[in-house]
Image (cartoon, rainbow over all chains, first blue to last red; front, side, top):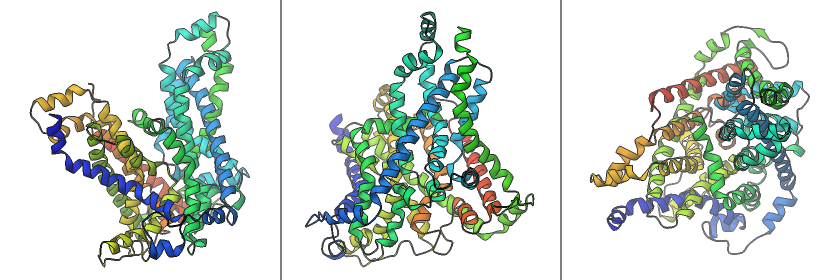
Length: 278
Length: 293
Protein backbone atom coordinates (compact mmCIF):
# COMPACT_ATOMS: atom_id res chain seq x y z
CA UNK A 1 0.00 0.00 0.00
CA UNK A 2 2.68 2.47 1.03
CA UNK A 3 4.89 1.46 -1.85
CA UNK A 4 2.03 1.95 -4.24
CA UNK A 5 1.43 5.47 -3.02
CA UNK A 6 5.12 6.24 -3.07
CA UNK A 7 5.44 5.11 -6.66
CA UNK A 8 2.45 7.13 -7.65
CA UNK A 9 3.83 10.32 -6.17
CA UNK A 10 7.20 10.99 -7.83
CA UNK A 11 5.86 14.13 -9.47
CA UNK A 12 4.88 15.62 -6.14
CA UNK A 13 8.15 14.61 -4.49
CA UNK A 14 10.13 16.34 -7.20
CA UNK A 15 7.85 19.35 -6.96
CA UNK A 16 8.46 19.64 -3.22
CA UNK A 17 12.24 19.71 -3.59
CA UNK A 18 12.07 21.97 -6.61
CA UNK A 19 9.98 24.48 -4.75
CA UNK A 20 12.29 24.26 -1.73
CA UNK A 21 15.08 25.29 -4.10
CA UNK A 22 13.02 28.18 -5.48
CA UNK A 23 12.24 29.26 -1.94
CA UNK A 24 15.70 29.13 -0.47
CA UNK A 25 18.19 29.49 -3.31
CA UNK A 26 17.73 33.27 -3.67
CA UNK A 27 18.82 33.57 -0.04
CA UNK A 28 21.81 31.32 -0.57
CA UNK A 29 22.66 33.36 -3.64
CA UNK A 30 22.54 36.49 -1.46
CA UNK A 31 24.71 34.89 1.21
CA UNK A 32 27.22 33.82 -1.45
CA UNK A 33 27.42 37.18 -3.14
CA UNK A 34 27.89 38.91 0.18
CA UNK A 35 31.38 37.34 0.08
CA UNK A 36 32.13 38.10 -3.55
CA UNK A 37 33.42 41.08 -5.49
CA UNK A 38 31.56 42.46 -8.46
CA UNK A 39 33.67 40.63 -11.00
CA UNK A 40 32.84 37.30 -9.40
CA UNK A 41 29.12 38.13 -9.03
CA UNK A 42 28.66 39.41 -12.56
CA UNK A 43 31.04 37.37 -14.66
CA UNK A 44 33.21 34.63 -13.27
CA UNK A 45 31.02 32.91 -10.67
CA UNK A 46 27.44 34.16 -10.46
CA UNK A 47 25.86 31.02 -8.96
CA UNK A 48 28.26 29.09 -6.81
CA UNK A 49 30.10 29.21 -3.52
CA UNK A 50 32.50 32.18 -3.35
CA UNK A 51 36.03 31.36 -4.46
CA UNK A 52 37.42 33.46 -1.68
CA UNK A 53 35.54 34.63 1.40
CA UNK A 54 35.79 38.38 1.26
CA UNK A 55 34.99 39.41 4.82
CA UNK A 56 35.93 42.96 3.87
CA UNK A 57 32.38 43.27 2.48
CA UNK A 58 31.07 42.84 6.02
CA UNK A 59 33.64 45.26 7.35
CA UNK A 60 32.57 47.92 4.87
CA UNK A 61 28.87 47.29 5.60
CA UNK A 62 29.59 47.76 9.30
CA UNK A 63 32.01 50.68 9.18
CA UNK A 64 31.15 52.84 6.20
CA UNK A 65 27.42 52.69 6.67
CA UNK A 66 25.16 52.88 9.66
CA UNK A 67 24.37 49.19 9.91
CA UNK A 68 25.31 48.84 13.62
CA UNK A 69 23.22 51.88 14.49
CA UNK A 70 20.19 50.66 12.50
CA UNK A 71 20.64 47.30 14.14
CA UNK A 72 20.61 48.73 17.66
CA UNK A 73 17.61 50.91 16.84
CA UNK A 74 15.74 47.83 15.61
CA UNK A 75 16.68 45.92 18.74
CA UNK A 76 15.54 48.74 21.02
CA UNK A 77 12.26 49.41 19.21
CA UNK A 78 11.40 45.71 18.92
CA UNK A 79 12.23 44.85 22.53
CA UNK A 80 10.26 47.76 24.00
CA UNK A 81 7.36 46.99 21.64
CA UNK A 82 7.32 43.36 22.74
CA UNK A 83 7.40 44.22 26.45
CA UNK A 84 4.77 46.94 26.12
CA UNK A 85 2.40 44.91 23.95
CA UNK A 86 2.57 41.78 26.07
CA UNK A 87 2.10 43.67 29.34
CA UNK A 88 -0.82 45.77 28.16
CA UNK A 89 -2.53 42.90 26.36
CA UNK A 90 -2.18 40.53 29.32
CA UNK A 91 -3.77 43.02 31.69
CA UNK A 92 -6.62 43.77 29.33
CA UNK A 93 -7.24 40.15 28.40
CA UNK A 94 -7.23 39.08 32.03
CA UNK A 95 -9.78 41.71 33.04
CA UNK A 96 -12.04 40.90 30.11
CA UNK A 97 -11.73 37.14 30.39
CA UNK A 98 -12.01 36.66 34.15
CA UNK A 99 -13.18 39.73 36.00
CA UNK A 100 -16.74 40.90 36.45
CA UNK A 101 -17.90 44.21 35.13
CA UNK A 102 -20.46 45.60 32.79
CA UNK A 103 -19.51 46.22 29.18
CA UNK A 104 -16.67 43.73 29.07
CA UNK A 105 -17.96 42.07 25.91
CA UNK A 106 -18.22 45.48 24.35
CA UNK A 107 -14.66 46.37 25.39
CA UNK A 108 -13.43 43.11 23.88
CA UNK A 109 -15.31 43.66 20.61
CA UNK A 110 -14.01 47.20 20.41
CA UNK A 111 -10.37 46.11 20.65
CA UNK A 112 -10.95 43.37 18.07
CA UNK A 113 -11.76 46.01 15.42
CA UNK A 114 -8.00 46.48 15.20
CA UNK A 115 -7.59 43.06 13.59
CA UNK A 116 -9.70 43.98 10.60
CA UNK A 117 -8.08 47.26 9.72
CA UNK A 118 -4.97 47.22 7.56
CA UNK A 119 -2.24 49.30 9.19
CA UNK A 120 -1.39 51.36 6.15
CA UNK A 121 -4.80 52.98 5.76
CA UNK A 122 -4.50 55.03 8.95
CA UNK A 123 -1.10 56.34 7.95
CA UNK A 124 -2.27 59.90 7.26
CA UNK A 125 -4.06 60.55 10.59
CA UNK A 126 -1.26 58.77 12.41
CA UNK A 127 1.38 61.03 10.88
CA UNK A 128 -0.63 64.10 11.86
CA UNK A 129 -1.16 62.75 15.38
CA UNK A 130 2.53 62.05 15.88
CA UNK A 131 3.33 65.54 14.68
CA UNK A 132 0.74 67.16 16.99
CA UNK A 133 2.12 65.26 19.99
CA UNK A 134 5.62 66.43 19.04
CA UNK A 135 6.80 62.86 18.70
CA UNK A 136 8.16 63.12 15.16
CA UNK A 137 11.57 61.51 14.95
CA UNK A 138 11.51 59.87 18.34
CA UNK A 139 11.55 56.18 19.20
CA UNK A 140 8.10 56.61 20.70
CA UNK A 141 6.63 57.54 17.32
CA UNK A 142 7.33 53.94 16.34
CA UNK A 143 6.94 52.10 19.61
CA UNK A 144 3.51 53.45 20.60
CA UNK A 145 1.82 52.72 17.25
CA UNK A 146 3.48 49.29 17.11
CA UNK A 147 2.06 48.47 20.53
CA UNK A 148 -1.36 49.79 19.57
CA UNK A 149 -1.42 47.71 16.36
CA UNK A 150 -0.31 44.50 18.03
CA UNK A 151 -2.49 44.81 21.08
CA UNK A 152 -5.73 43.66 19.38
CA UNK A 153 -4.37 40.38 18.21
CA UNK A 154 -2.37 39.64 21.36
CA UNK A 155 -5.44 40.33 23.45
CA UNK A 156 -7.45 37.79 21.45
CA UNK A 157 -4.84 35.09 21.92
CA UNK A 158 -4.44 35.73 25.66
CA UNK A 159 -8.20 35.90 26.09
CA UNK A 160 -8.52 32.37 24.76
CA UNK A 161 -5.88 31.11 27.17
CA UNK A 162 -7.30 32.88 30.20
CA UNK A 163 -10.76 31.48 29.47
CA UNK A 164 -9.42 27.94 29.50
CA UNK A 165 -8.10 28.21 33.07
CA UNK A 166 -10.52 26.84 35.71
CA UNK A 167 -12.31 29.53 37.66
CA UNK A 168 -11.80 27.80 41.05
CA UNK A 169 -8.26 29.12 41.06
CA UNK A 170 -9.34 32.66 41.84
CA UNK A 171 -11.76 31.45 44.46
CA UNK A 172 -8.98 29.54 46.19
CA UNK A 173 -6.68 32.53 45.96
CA UNK A 174 -9.39 34.79 47.33
CA UNK A 175 -10.03 32.47 50.28
CA UNK A 176 -6.31 32.30 50.94
CA UNK A 177 -6.32 36.06 51.26
CA UNK A 178 -4.45 37.01 48.10
CA UNK A 179 -5.51 40.25 46.42
CA UNK A 180 -6.34 40.51 42.75
CA UNK A 181 -2.93 41.81 41.74
CA UNK A 182 -1.14 38.94 43.46
CA UNK A 183 -3.56 36.49 41.90
CA UNK A 184 -2.89 37.88 38.46
CA UNK A 185 0.86 37.99 38.85
CA UNK A 186 1.56 34.87 40.90
CA UNK A 187 -1.14 32.47 39.77
CA UNK A 188 -2.49 33.45 36.36
CA UNK A 189 0.66 34.60 34.57
CA UNK A 190 2.60 31.36 35.10
CA UNK A 191 -0.36 29.48 33.62
CA UNK A 192 -0.27 31.38 30.35
CA UNK A 193 3.50 31.33 29.73
CA UNK A 194 3.12 29.20 26.57
CA UNK A 195 0.88 31.90 25.11
CA UNK A 196 3.31 34.58 26.20
CA UNK A 197 6.19 32.79 24.47
CA UNK A 198 4.14 32.52 21.28
CA UNK A 199 3.20 36.17 21.31
CA UNK A 200 6.73 37.34 22.13
CA UNK A 201 7.90 35.70 18.92
CA UNK A 202 4.98 37.03 16.90
CA UNK A 203 5.29 40.62 18.08
CA UNK A 204 9.07 40.58 17.81
CA UNK A 205 8.95 39.49 14.16
CA UNK A 206 6.24 42.04 13.36
CA UNK A 207 8.16 44.90 15.00
CA UNK A 208 11.57 43.92 13.64
CA UNK A 209 10.29 43.79 10.07
CA UNK A 210 7.80 46.67 10.11
CA UNK A 211 8.32 49.02 7.21
CA UNK A 212 5.51 51.44 6.17
CA UNK A 213 5.08 53.21 9.52
CA UNK A 214 8.82 53.61 9.96
CA UNK A 215 9.02 55.00 6.44
CA UNK A 216 6.43 57.66 7.12
CA UNK A 217 7.37 58.66 10.65
CA UNK A 218 11.16 58.49 10.77
CA UNK A 219 13.48 60.61 8.69
CA UNK A 220 16.27 61.09 11.22
CA UNK A 221 19.26 58.99 10.20
CA UNK A 222 20.03 58.25 13.87
CA UNK A 223 16.64 56.68 14.54
CA UNK A 224 16.17 54.53 11.47
CA UNK A 225 15.45 50.86 11.96
CA UNK A 226 16.97 48.24 9.70
CA UNK A 227 14.13 47.89 7.17
CA UNK A 228 14.23 51.63 6.64
CA UNK A 229 17.99 52.10 6.81
CA UNK A 230 18.70 49.33 4.33
CA UNK A 231 16.40 50.91 1.82
CA UNK A 232 18.96 53.46 0.87
CA UNK A 233 21.71 51.01 0.22
CA UNK A 234 20.22 50.44 -3.17
CA UNK A 235 21.41 53.82 -4.39
CA UNK A 236 24.71 53.97 -2.58
CA UNK A 237 25.76 50.44 -3.25
CA UNK A 238 24.85 49.94 -6.86
CA UNK A 239 28.54 49.69 -7.55
CA UNK A 240 29.22 47.41 -4.59
CA UNK A 241 26.82 44.46 -4.53
CA UNK A 242 29.00 42.54 -2.09
CA UNK A 243 28.69 45.08 0.71
CA UNK A 244 24.97 45.40 0.09
CA UNK A 245 24.58 41.64 0.32
CA UNK A 246 26.57 41.73 3.55
CA UNK A 247 24.33 44.42 5.04
CA UNK A 248 21.19 42.50 4.06
CA UNK A 249 22.60 39.29 5.52
CA UNK A 250 23.37 41.04 8.83
CA UNK A 251 19.84 42.44 8.91
CA UNK A 252 18.32 39.01 8.33
CA UNK A 253 20.42 37.08 10.83
CA UNK A 254 18.37 37.71 14.01
CA UNK A 255 15.02 36.62 12.60
CA UNK A 256 16.48 33.69 10.66
CA UNK A 257 18.35 32.51 13.76
CA UNK A 258 15.25 32.85 15.92
CA UNK A 259 13.36 30.84 13.32
CA UNK A 260 15.93 28.09 12.95
CA UNK A 261 16.33 27.72 16.72
CA UNK A 262 12.61 27.77 17.49
CA UNK A 263 11.11 26.76 14.17
CA UNK A 264 8.10 24.94 15.59
CA UNK A 265 7.24 27.78 17.96
CA UNK A 266 7.69 30.40 15.27
CA UNK A 267 5.39 28.58 12.88
CA UNK A 268 2.90 28.21 15.68
CA UNK A 269 3.20 31.88 16.57
CA UNK A 270 2.72 33.01 13.00
CA UNK A 271 -0.22 30.72 12.34
CA UNK A 272 -2.02 31.17 15.65
CA UNK A 273 -4.06 33.82 13.86
CA UNK A 274 -6.05 31.38 11.78
CA UNK A 275 -7.63 29.93 14.90
CA UNK A 276 -8.57 33.35 16.16
CA UNK A 277 -9.61 35.19 13.02
CA UNK A 278 -11.27 32.33 11.15
CA UNK B 1 -15.83 36.72 45.20
CA UNK B 2 -17.80 39.39 43.47
CA UNK B 3 -15.85 41.99 45.34
CA UNK B 4 -12.65 40.22 44.43
CA UNK B 5 -13.31 39.90 40.68
CA UNK B 6 -15.35 43.07 40.54
CA UNK B 7 -12.65 45.29 42.01
CA UNK B 8 -13.31 48.51 40.11
CA UNK B 9 -9.90 50.03 40.65
CA UNK B 10 -8.17 46.89 39.45
CA UNK B 11 -10.43 46.65 36.41
CA UNK B 12 -9.71 50.23 35.47
CA UNK B 13 -5.97 49.76 35.90
CA UNK B 14 -6.07 46.60 33.81
CA UNK B 15 -8.11 47.79 30.87
CA UNK B 16 -7.18 51.47 30.70
CA UNK B 17 -3.73 51.20 29.04
CA UNK B 18 -4.98 49.04 26.16
CA UNK B 19 -8.17 51.05 25.65
CA UNK B 20 -6.32 54.36 25.75
CA UNK B 21 -3.57 53.38 23.35
CA UNK B 22 -5.94 51.64 20.97
CA UNK B 23 -8.40 54.50 20.94
CA UNK B 24 -5.82 57.20 20.34
CA UNK B 25 -3.63 55.38 17.84
CA UNK B 26 -6.01 53.08 15.97
CA UNK B 27 -9.67 53.88 16.47
CA UNK B 28 -9.46 57.66 16.34
CA UNK B 29 -7.30 57.58 13.18
CA UNK B 30 -9.87 55.30 11.48
CA UNK B 31 -12.60 57.82 12.25
CA UNK B 32 -10.31 60.58 11.02
CA UNK B 33 -9.72 58.84 7.69
CA UNK B 34 -13.43 58.96 6.92
CA UNK B 35 -13.93 62.44 8.31
CA UNK B 36 -10.92 63.96 6.57
CA UNK B 37 -11.79 62.30 3.27
CA UNK B 38 -14.50 64.97 3.01
CA UNK B 39 -12.04 67.84 3.23
CA UNK B 40 -9.74 69.68 0.95
CA UNK B 41 -6.83 69.62 3.34
CA UNK B 42 -3.09 70.13 3.24
CA UNK B 43 -2.43 68.54 6.63
CA UNK B 44 -1.42 71.84 8.21
CA UNK B 45 -4.45 74.14 8.19
CA UNK B 46 -8.03 73.45 9.17
CA UNK B 47 -9.04 72.57 5.63
CA UNK B 48 -12.30 73.17 3.76
CA UNK B 49 -15.26 70.85 4.00
CA UNK B 50 -16.16 69.69 0.49
CA UNK B 51 -18.35 66.68 1.41
CA UNK B 52 -18.04 64.03 -1.32
CA UNK B 53 -16.05 66.01 -3.86
CA UNK B 54 -12.87 64.01 -3.21
CA UNK B 55 -14.77 60.84 -4.05
CA UNK B 56 -16.25 62.39 -7.19
CA UNK B 57 -12.79 63.43 -8.27
CA UNK B 58 -11.42 59.99 -7.45
CA UNK B 59 -14.04 58.20 -9.54
CA UNK B 60 -13.00 60.33 -12.51
CA UNK B 61 -9.28 59.89 -11.87
CA UNK B 62 -7.70 57.34 -14.20
CA UNK B 63 -4.99 56.78 -11.59
CA UNK B 64 -7.66 55.47 -9.23
CA UNK B 65 -8.71 52.84 -11.75
CA UNK B 66 -5.10 51.86 -12.44
CA UNK B 67 -4.58 51.50 -8.67
CA UNK B 68 -7.76 49.53 -8.21
CA UNK B 69 -6.91 47.23 -11.11
CA UNK B 70 -3.37 46.64 -9.84
CA UNK B 71 -4.67 45.83 -6.37
CA UNK B 72 -7.02 43.25 -7.89
CA UNK B 73 -4.25 41.75 -10.06
CA UNK B 74 -2.00 41.57 -7.03
CA UNK B 75 -4.74 39.95 -4.95
CA UNK B 76 -5.57 37.37 -7.62
CA UNK B 77 -1.93 36.42 -8.17
CA UNK B 78 -1.36 35.99 -4.44
CA UNK B 79 -4.55 34.01 -3.94
CA UNK B 80 -4.02 31.69 -6.90
CA UNK B 81 -0.31 31.00 -6.44
CA UNK B 82 -0.20 30.80 -2.67
CA UNK B 83 -3.29 28.70 -2.26
CA UNK B 84 -2.64 26.27 -5.13
CA UNK B 85 1.08 25.73 -4.53
CA UNK B 86 0.59 25.92 -0.77
CA UNK B 87 -2.03 23.17 -0.98
CA UNK B 88 0.15 20.83 -3.02
CA UNK B 89 3.11 21.39 -0.70
CA UNK B 90 1.10 21.03 2.50
CA UNK B 91 -0.85 17.94 1.48
CA UNK B 92 2.19 16.16 0.08
CA UNK B 93 4.21 16.88 3.20
CA UNK B 94 1.35 15.77 5.42
CA UNK B 95 1.08 12.46 3.54
CA UNK B 96 4.09 11.54 5.57
CA UNK B 97 6.12 9.63 3.00
CA UNK B 98 8.58 12.38 2.33
CA UNK B 99 12.15 12.29 3.56
CA UNK B 100 13.74 15.48 4.84
CA UNK B 101 10.46 17.00 5.90
CA UNK B 102 12.16 19.28 8.40
CA UNK B 103 14.45 20.75 5.74
CA UNK B 104 11.52 21.27 3.40
CA UNK B 105 9.48 23.07 6.03
CA UNK B 106 12.35 25.34 6.97
CA UNK B 107 13.10 26.11 3.33
CA UNK B 108 9.51 27.11 2.66
CA UNK B 109 9.16 29.22 5.77
CA UNK B 110 12.44 31.15 5.94
CA UNK B 111 11.39 33.96 3.53
CA UNK B 112 8.42 34.70 5.81
CA UNK B 113 10.64 35.90 8.64
CA UNK B 114 12.72 38.21 6.44
CA UNK B 115 12.23 41.94 6.29
CA UNK B 116 10.31 43.10 3.24
CA UNK B 117 13.15 45.51 2.46
CA UNK B 118 15.65 42.68 2.26
CA UNK B 119 13.32 40.59 0.13
CA UNK B 120 12.55 43.41 -2.29
CA UNK B 121 16.16 44.45 -2.70
CA UNK B 122 17.20 40.86 -3.16
CA UNK B 123 14.64 40.52 -5.94
CA UNK B 124 15.71 43.81 -7.46
CA UNK B 125 19.12 42.19 -7.75
CA UNK B 126 17.57 39.03 -9.16
CA UNK B 127 15.50 40.91 -11.74
CA UNK B 128 18.41 43.14 -12.74
CA UNK B 129 18.48 43.27 -16.53
CA UNK B 130 22.22 42.82 -16.87
CA UNK B 131 23.55 40.95 -13.88
CA UNK B 132 20.43 39.55 -12.23
CA UNK B 133 20.16 35.91 -11.22
CA UNK B 134 17.14 35.27 -13.42
CA UNK B 135 18.76 36.50 -16.58
CA UNK B 136 21.96 34.67 -15.63
CA UNK B 137 19.98 31.46 -15.35
CA UNK B 138 18.50 31.98 -18.80
CA UNK B 139 22.01 32.65 -20.05
CA UNK B 140 23.37 29.52 -18.41
CA UNK B 141 20.58 27.49 -19.99
CA UNK B 142 21.67 28.86 -23.34
CA UNK B 143 18.55 30.92 -23.88
CA UNK B 144 19.09 34.34 -25.30
CA UNK B 145 15.98 35.47 -23.47
CA UNK B 146 16.89 38.59 -21.58
CA UNK B 147 14.49 40.97 -20.02
CA UNK B 148 14.33 43.95 -17.75
CA UNK B 149 11.43 42.62 -15.73
CA UNK B 150 10.55 45.74 -13.82
CA UNK B 151 10.81 48.41 -16.49
CA UNK B 152 8.14 47.01 -18.77
CA UNK B 153 4.89 48.61 -17.67
CA UNK B 154 2.92 45.52 -18.67
CA UNK B 155 4.93 42.96 -16.72
CA UNK B 156 6.06 45.05 -13.73
CA UNK B 157 2.98 44.46 -11.59
CA UNK B 158 3.22 40.71 -12.15
CA UNK B 159 6.91 40.69 -11.34
CA UNK B 160 6.24 42.51 -8.07
CA UNK B 161 3.29 40.32 -7.11
CA UNK B 162 5.46 37.27 -7.70
CA UNK B 163 7.93 38.53 -5.09
CA UNK B 164 5.19 38.84 -2.50
CA UNK B 165 3.75 35.45 -3.41
CA UNK B 166 7.22 33.95 -3.02
CA UNK B 167 7.86 35.56 0.35
CA UNK B 168 4.61 34.47 2.03
CA UNK B 169 4.17 31.09 0.36
CA UNK B 170 5.60 29.43 3.46
CA UNK B 171 3.03 31.14 5.61
CA UNK B 172 0.16 29.68 3.65
CA UNK B 173 1.97 26.35 3.56
CA UNK B 174 2.25 26.35 7.37
CA UNK B 175 -1.42 27.29 7.79
CA UNK B 176 -2.59 24.58 5.41
CA UNK B 177 -0.25 21.98 6.87
CA UNK B 178 -1.59 22.67 10.35
CA UNK B 179 -5.13 22.32 9.01
CA UNK B 180 -4.36 19.06 7.19
CA UNK B 181 -2.74 17.66 10.33
CA UNK B 182 -5.83 18.38 12.39
CA UNK B 183 -8.05 16.23 10.19
CA UNK B 184 -8.77 12.91 11.89
CA UNK B 185 -7.02 9.99 10.22
CA UNK B 186 -10.21 7.98 9.64
CA UNK B 187 -11.40 10.45 7.02
CA UNK B 188 -8.36 9.79 4.88
CA UNK B 189 -8.61 6.07 5.59
CA UNK B 190 -12.24 6.05 4.53
CA UNK B 191 -11.30 7.70 1.26
CA UNK B 192 -8.58 5.13 0.65
CA UNK B 193 -10.83 2.17 1.38
CA UNK B 194 -13.34 3.49 -1.11
CA UNK B 195 -10.60 3.10 -3.67
CA UNK B 196 -10.35 6.76 -4.38
CA UNK B 197 -6.96 7.84 -5.52
CA UNK B 198 -5.03 10.02 -3.18
CA UNK B 199 -5.54 13.40 -4.82
CA UNK B 200 -9.12 12.62 -5.61
CA UNK B 201 -9.49 11.84 -1.93
CA UNK B 202 -7.84 15.10 -1.03
CA UNK B 203 -10.13 16.96 -3.39
CA UNK B 204 -13.26 15.30 -2.06
CA UNK B 205 -12.39 14.90 1.61
CA UNK B 206 -9.36 16.74 2.93
CA UNK B 207 -9.78 20.05 1.14
CA UNK B 208 -13.46 20.54 2.04
CA UNK B 209 -12.59 19.75 5.66
CA UNK B 210 -10.00 22.52 5.55
CA UNK B 211 -12.56 25.12 4.42
CA UNK B 212 -12.06 27.31 7.49
CA UNK B 213 -8.36 27.58 6.82
CA UNK B 214 -8.92 28.25 3.13
CA UNK B 215 -11.21 31.05 4.10
CA UNK B 216 -8.51 32.56 6.26
CA UNK B 217 -5.86 32.13 3.55
CA UNK B 218 -8.13 33.74 1.01
CA UNK B 219 -8.87 36.76 3.21
CA UNK B 220 -5.18 37.10 3.93
CA UNK B 221 -4.09 36.87 0.29
CA UNK B 222 -6.78 39.16 -1.08
CA UNK B 223 -6.63 41.90 1.54
CA UNK B 224 -2.83 41.62 1.42
CA UNK B 225 -2.93 42.18 -2.34
CA UNK B 226 -5.37 45.08 -2.19
CA UNK B 227 -3.21 46.76 0.45
CA UNK B 228 0.11 46.18 -1.28
CA UNK B 229 2.45 49.08 -0.76
CA UNK B 230 5.98 48.29 0.42
CA UNK B 231 6.73 46.08 -2.56
CA UNK B 232 6.04 48.78 -5.11
CA UNK B 233 7.53 51.52 -2.98
CA UNK B 234 10.85 49.70 -2.82
CA UNK B 235 10.94 48.01 -6.20
CA UNK B 236 9.44 50.45 -8.68
CA UNK B 237 8.29 53.60 -6.90
CA UNK B 238 4.91 53.04 -8.56
CA UNK B 239 6.47 53.08 -12.02
CA UNK B 240 7.26 52.74 -14.80
CA UNK B 241 5.02 55.80 -15.09
CA UNK B 242 2.12 55.00 -12.82
CA UNK B 243 1.79 51.38 -13.91
CA UNK B 244 2.35 49.79 -10.49
CA UNK B 245 0.26 52.12 -8.33
CA UNK B 246 -2.08 50.61 -5.78
CA UNK B 247 -4.61 52.40 -3.59
CA UNK B 248 -2.21 52.50 -0.66
CA UNK B 249 0.51 53.86 -2.90
CA UNK B 250 -1.90 56.45 -4.25
CA UNK B 251 -2.78 57.44 -0.68
CA UNK B 252 0.88 57.70 0.22
CA UNK B 253 1.68 59.84 -2.79
CA UNK B 254 -1.34 62.13 -2.47
CA UNK B 255 -0.58 62.87 1.17
CA UNK B 256 3.15 62.73 1.59
CA UNK B 257 4.37 63.77 -1.84
CA UNK B 258 1.71 66.10 -3.21
CA UNK B 259 0.31 67.33 0.11
CA UNK B 260 -3.33 66.49 -0.67
CA UNK B 261 -4.19 64.88 2.65
CA UNK B 262 -7.94 64.95 2.05
CA UNK B 263 -7.71 63.25 -1.32
CA UNK B 264 -5.31 60.67 0.12
CA UNK B 265 -7.76 59.98 2.95
CA UNK B 266 -10.48 59.33 0.38
CA UNK B 267 -8.49 56.52 -1.22
CA UNK B 268 -7.68 55.15 2.25
CA UNK B 269 -11.38 55.21 3.16
CA UNK B 270 -12.23 53.43 -0.08
CA UNK B 271 -9.63 50.79 0.75
CA UNK B 272 -11.05 50.16 4.23
CA UNK B 273 -14.51 49.61 2.78
CA UNK B 274 -13.16 47.45 -0.03
CA UNK B 275 -11.33 45.20 2.45
CA UNK B 276 -14.33 44.92 4.75
CA UNK B 277 -16.58 43.93 1.85
CA UNK B 278 -14.10 41.30 0.68
CA UNK B 279 -13.69 39.86 4.18
CA UNK B 280 -17.43 39.79 4.67
CA UNK B 281 -18.09 38.25 1.26
CA UNK B 282 -15.52 35.50 1.71
CA UNK B 283 -16.91 34.67 5.14
CA UNK B 284 -20.39 34.49 3.66
CA UNK B 285 -19.55 32.46 0.58
CA UNK B 286 -17.30 29.80 2.03
CA UNK B 287 -18.29 27.32 4.71
CA UNK B 288 -21.22 29.01 6.31
CA UNK B 289 -21.45 26.31 8.88
CA UNK B 290 -18.49 25.58 11.02
CA UNK B 291 -17.30 22.07 10.39
CA UNK B 292 -17.51 19.70 13.30
CA UNK B 293 -15.52 16.52 13.04
